[in-house]
Image (tube, rainbow, N blue to C red; front, top):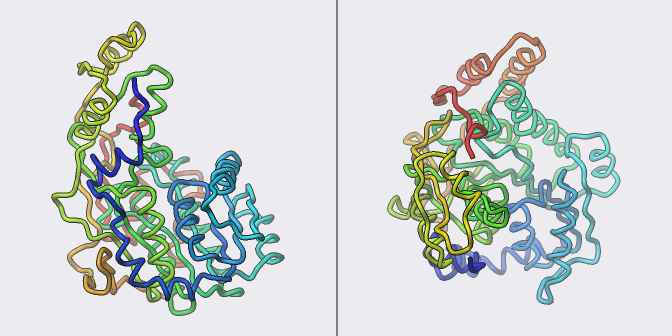
Length: 403
């Protein structure tokens, strides 16, 4: 099979945009972005992932004086550094360091206090997969990372205030139907409770095409391992490129007013079915496929296939918990500004709870999680108490039960 040009494939078959959606917004605000980034100190948490690393590349175009990157993925940090250092056109500040650590650990606090303060802080350290809510343990880890640690970090930032703080969200926070989306919605409410004391913005956006851990990135790995492809036939999504994902976050971080929630202006007709992307992927790769009736048939065919055989692909209808067949960036009750930017909308009336209300929510969650007597449904019930628009879809099936 031909190894296709993934960035070009994204432009031609997924986003169908020859250049970034945000070129005009970046150009229009180039002077202001330079004023707010050039010569500044930047801390990026979760910077080894697709979105975090794309944010770093977007920010580096405006030449900050200092860049520190924190991530639990040591290999990811190594590859990030290799990528930045190997690009002849890439600016890298002299004061550049990476730290393989968790932003909730004591050693992170030591580093932050000793090496800060930082002018620009961006947090991408989040559980982002719906598959990460399979049982009470995985949900507890998700809530701890997305909510508890986020609040602890905000308390630290109150003592050492940056000029700009950004924390990534997700489209799944709008009318959430899964615990991951609910955890990010709660995260939004946590950060908004601090937005009168800190300059805070966030962004909800679409699937990032071929991002680390995504279904589409998994296609490349399956091909290398000569394993079958599995794809939902009934799910369609909005998509942005990795480059665009970083630009959204940079624009929100540097241009937004405190408590703004940014999202890309994408029309409903721009959503793409995963099945269509899969068919295009194999067509561009000059490899025919054979559609299989189930996973076992696909695996059996993969065992005996040669380079001349059609590639086994299993298309299925989604039936796992928390799966939303469509995406939305804002709700009917949101006040949205569509005029400020060319390609970005902004939710202007994010709910702002008082800190005591946030602390009550977190206390209730921690009390349940520390009781030892709880299950997934009990966690969902507590989340629903504080998130009235959370309508969890439970089917008893997890993505970890699929290929």
